[in-house]
Length: 477
Image 1 (cartoon, rainbow, N blue to C red):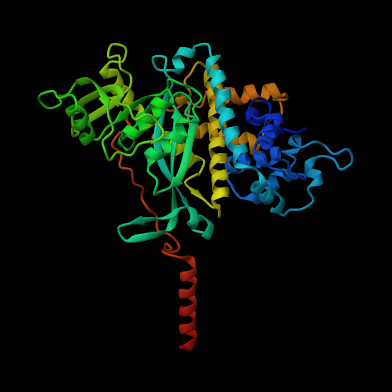
Image 2: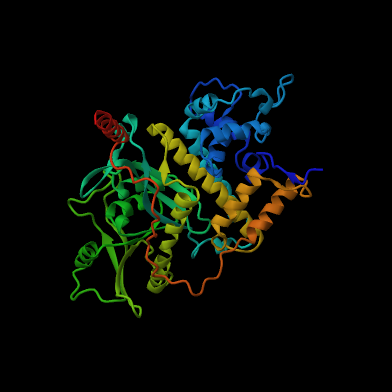
């Protein structure tokens, strides 16, 4: 008698039942207006392969092919009347068919799946017993921040992106800039954009906000986003902002009021933000002044240097949105750093092995889709347990979801409904530990261990030539 039961792909994460049904995937492929001939590995199977690659500890294509041969994805493809299920019809151990399918699957399908998962997540929140707790004063919260991803240089990538550079010149790696907005309640990705490092973060905000289906959200950003351009885009898309300003920008806004004296802590002034003559703006959007409030507070804490915090917000009612509450809300901006840690550390999205821009964009979208699927399960579990999703540990939930995928669950959990309920109950118990003695000033450094081989600097081809020259010198001697 079996002691472990393996869930099918339809049962895992409810991916192909509630979140990504086959009819929707077919519609997205058709909407992409590409004519493709799919053999054994249909778009549904390829999409699952992308997700499995990110969930699995081994992210190689060969690991996906091995997964298909186990029969775990048989439920995603129709059973042939004579040849049988997908795993029986797969006779080759080569990755060629799967790699070709990855290249054929349109990027728009992955992006549509990412947006659809978040739409389903919104529906769950609206149907929650306490929907008011998912917002702040009736507004959805969005944490806006940027990061970079690293790729090995290839001719195709070098034509699209630029290598990283520092004070000593260009480095080996290609660095891609990205900006994303995360939901303040579910931690899910609401929208994202990527470009070369020659493009500023503020220039990517428009593409991010265009993906948000909710209007009236509050976007919070640090000083990189404290520009008129971001406020201009937010107004055009019907969103609010709460942006940290650099001191120079704050002083210019205060000077426009023509009031005597410098800014003092606790200042709260209504302003109309007008772009400076050389400011970067969206030329096709209105350039009229953005009305809002200029806020300033000096934050002091024993044992720390004081912090001067300048904010601009389009929440114009000081009685409904007091300065102290907006300052406290800004203090939650650090949550976006945790979200990026989940993406880049837990899901290992810091570095990609793609050799072309098209495949990199697909792998990035697939990674964000996988992240949103985990956030969706965590949100489901939290709502059932009357918790906030941020009270659950992403890393612990990720381990249990991956164990369900690879190992399975006890055989006594014998029905699909029981499988889901069993997993959600386990995830709801994965709460974050209470760490009252954890310090907030821990240095962001790691202790390096000695490596077996020295670090490679520069091109690997140049290193190979150097080894050949050394070998030639030894043979001559």
